[in-house]
Length: 118
Image (cartoon, rainbow, N blue to C red; front, side, top):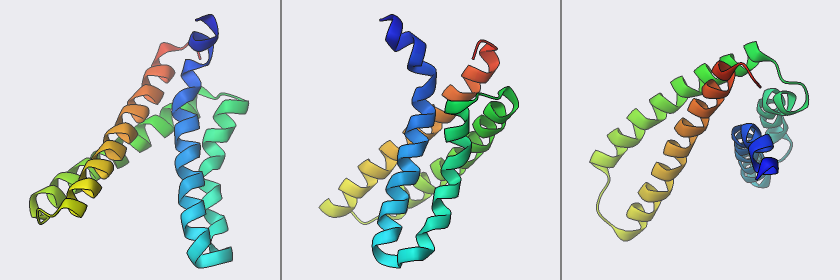
C-alpha cells in the first residue's frame, strides 16, 4: 500500500503521456512524419515525472482544467445533436468517459500542486 501511495501522484502524468502516445500512433499511421511534433506535447508531463516543478505542475493543471471544461461543453453540445443509432451511442459513451477522465486528471494535478508535498 505504501508503494501505491508513493506513486499515486504520478497517475495523471502517466495518463496524459498515454493519451499523447495514442494520439501520435493514430496520426502516424495516416500522416507519417508529420505526426512527430505531437510528441512535444508529452514533454512537460515527462518532465514532471523526472524533476517535479511546482509552477509547471500548477500551470499544467489549470491549463488542462480549462481545456477539459471546453471539451465538456463541446461534448454536451454534441450529445444534444447526435442521432440515436447504436454506433453513435458507443462513441458518445467512449468520448464522454475520456472527457470526464481528462477533467478528473487535471483536477488531480491541481490537487497535487496545492498539497505542497509533491
